[in-house]
Length: 98
Image (cartoon, rainbow, N blue to C red; front, side, top):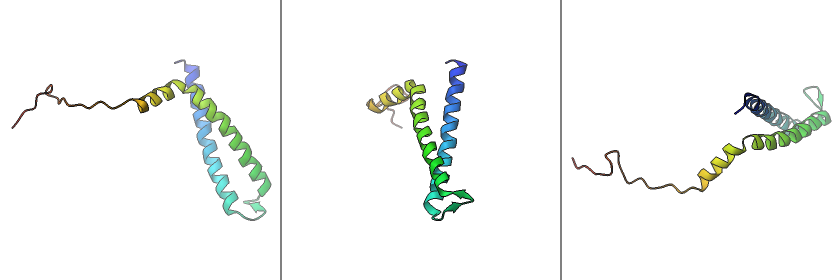
């Protein structure tokens, strides 16, 4: 993997985390704060910022899936694979009685 690709992945993941925290915090403020001003910020301004952050997080989530598509496909194939029964023990399949 190229170093630049790794940096882009790190930036996208970090932005997703920061936006998730912002959305959770602003969503809680909007839900519980029923007045016109919330911590000195107009309710409509906070709602607009919350909506814009939600739009950005959707775009970043799509980019995140695209950047990590190989890993995602491996994980999907691991989900669809059947687990094989391991009947052999560490002694090469021979059961020892003690």
